[in-house]
Image 1 (cartoon, rainbow, N blue to C red):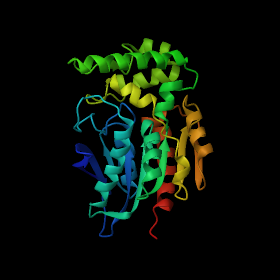
Image 2: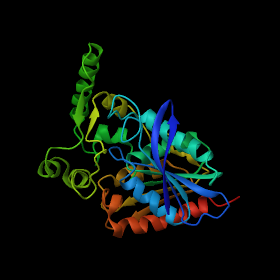
Image 3: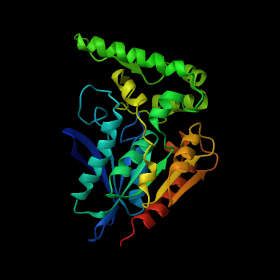
Image 4: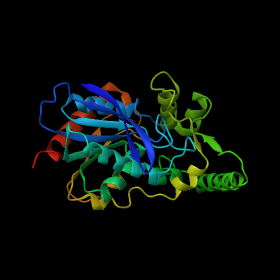
Length: 307
């Protein structure tokens, strides 16, 4: 497997990516997969893990940093803008169509965590995406409104929207962009506030398990109202008749979100369970990532077959 650093444009913002190619490409153009990272991730983390593993299985793959984050451009830093994230995925497809190694008629998309929802929104409107898969996919707007497990007190998001409104007013008067931390200060706080889902998220992003210096540790407050009023799953039915695969862990706090997307999707569709895996287990645990990659390989091999 070979990796090349690349850049491409997304609505005027330069995005940084890693293009992975199989060790032996031959001369025939390859099927390709765009891989989107979780909401706080960067291309060097789980998105890069899946991209590299799929390249080993014979696909050209592209993992990249979202606008305003990682090595990509855009100001203010730490902005999470659902509309831009969807545009970034479409821009990645556009970039792959320009690569001589890629068959432009055989491009798929894999969204992990937040990019699962963004991938649904992108693929619904972009018919160049021939097959879509998600791993631990979530609708980040619904997650903000209802919490990871759907039981969050509605007052929580209302308080966050108050903070976002105050920040926008302060910025209009010349203040710098206000931010909020993505994770609590300690592991103990993360486990207490977010249970297993929050604790494992902290463990992945804030310890040597998965930490990366460019991974987002805070978002701008102006991200909040953008996220809270977004609905990534709304048009999942428009993906058909292109195939959809939803991969979820049986122990994931967010598994109900995958079930919701699956219920609203149209055939051909498949909900595939990874036994014993939590949401974050599917980021990097070999015993869970391995079976997920096997299923993704099967799915994209069929979905991106030459016509």
